[in-house]
Image (cartoon, rainbow, N blue to C red):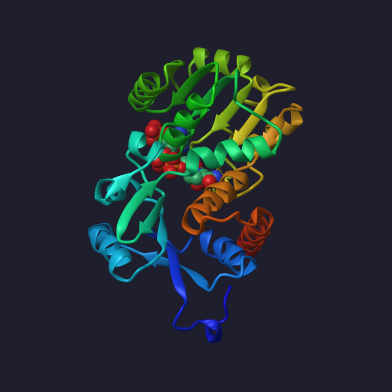
Length: 297
Ligand code: NAP
């Protein structure tokens, strides 16, 4: 991170808006990358109340910020307020990155692509695979669309609220034309497809701090050797689901890979340059470790 004395008349600002935003791990991760890239930029968290989102976006333009990340609960609101939507952001109606292109605010969604890059980096792929996705919230929607768009053979979406899974399945079917079904969490059918799937993804918040001691969303005995088991939860990194998957000799992917890559894609879109992934990952892991230590883990 740039020391205060290094800020000058040329310093450019990027940041993240959310409510709350204090939990965000993006500032340490992005500032480490900016420093490594030698940019006279600084990345700042902005706690923006829901009723002030339009003003916050106007400020991005008025103050000449390079761009912002958008986190919960503003992703859908921002999609309605930007000047243009690109790629999956248009389909999903959700934005996690805004680029200020000479006063035109362009909204992107890098979560789905971030997940795919993380899986690819770990040696996995969804291409030609049967995939089961637990969860149909914001992160689940981004991952479902990305998985379906990148050649998955079949997708099952399992959710506690069936109606949410059904409307996501309808969207994905219409956009990508692949075989996709919605299932109710806790049914025999959900168990059957999880046993069959080659890639199992948790996009629910089950297992996230402070609920890390709850049983995983998927029973351990449904998992098997050779499957990929991916958890989007990154706090803690080592979730009960991933521990269960490892005991079954499945291959695992924790949520930090997606977090790094969605951030890297945002930074790429702002800078037009290659970004230092290893530096971002190191800073993220250090920030997470510090957080876990501070609560006595
Ligand atoms: P969200 O929009 O609130 O969606 C939450 C999802 O979890 C819904 O499908 C919800 O089901 C389900 N759920 C919540 N509690 C549950 C429970 N006790 N049992 C079963 N299902 C439950 O949240 P989100 O933004 O998608 O985030 C979900 C998780 O992904 C969080 O842990 C978040 O930290 C993580 N995430 C990670 C990344 C990354 O980069 N790694 C990025 C974004 C999010 P209903 O529809 O029935 O309510």
